[in-house]
Image (cartoon, rainbow, N blue to C red; front, side, top):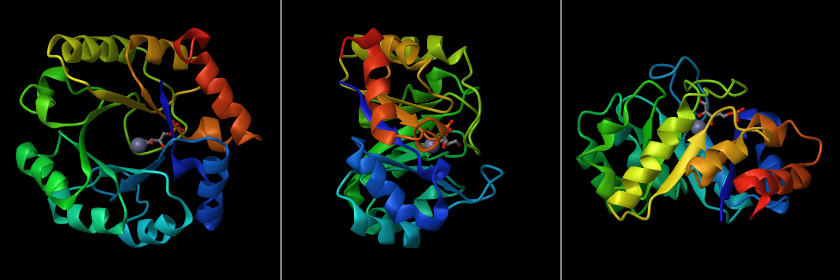
Amino acid sequence: MIKIAPSILASDFSKLGEEIARVERAGADMIHLDVMDGHFVPNITIGPPVIKCLRKVTDLPFDAHLMIEEPDRYIHDFVEAGANIISVHVENNPHLHRTIELIRECGARPSVVLNPATPLNALDAVLGDVDMVLLMTVDPGFGGQQYIESMTGKIRELRQIALRRGLDLDIEVDGGIDLSNIREVTMAGANVIVAGTTIFGAPDAAEIIRSLRQNAFGGTT
Ligand code: DX5
Ligand code: ZN
C-alpha cells in the first residue's frame, strides 16, 4: 500500500486549516509540511507556531520536511508543535547520527533526505537508523517543478539496497509527482508519495487522490 502525503506548499495559505481538513476528507494519509528558512533553500515558509495551530485541525500524521540550516536547534520545537515524522537533509548536516537520535529522543520518527545530486552512498552509515528516506525528485525550494527522470533509477537502487539489508524502509518521493509518473516511482520502490500541485491544483481532491492510488503500481492496489 502506498501513502499519499499532500504538500501544503501548493495550498491556499490564507486558509491552511480548511485546506488540510479538505485533503483529510479526500483520503490523504499524512500531511507533508515544507519548512524552508531562506538559507538552505531560496524560499521561506512556515515554522513551529504555524504547525502548532494546524495540529488542532487534523489527527493525520505530520511529515515535516526541514529545509533549514542547523536543524538540531529546532527539532524539539517541531516535535512539540506536533510533527510526527521529521526529515532532515544530509547535505548540510555533519552530525547525522546525533540529529537522528535527537529526533527519536523527542518522540518523532526520523527520516533523512537526499537532494537529486546527492549520491545514495551518503546514506551508508545511517540507513539502519532511520524509518524513512526521502528522495527529492526535484531540487528543493519550490512546488510545481518537473520530475527529474534520472531519479527513477535512484529510487530503484535504494529499494534494492534496503531489501538486501533486510530493512523495512519507507521510501518517500517529493517533487513533480503526478498521474503520469506515479506508476514509474512506485514500481521502482517508492511507497510514500508527496504531491503538492497535483492535489491542491485539482478541482476535486478526493478524485485525484483516488486516481493517484489507482495509477500507482499500474493500478494493482
Ligand atoms: C519542494 C518541496 C515539495 C513540493 C512538492 O522543495 O519539498 O514538497 O511542495 O511540490 P510539487 O508536488 O508541486 O512538485
Ligand atoms: Zn517537501
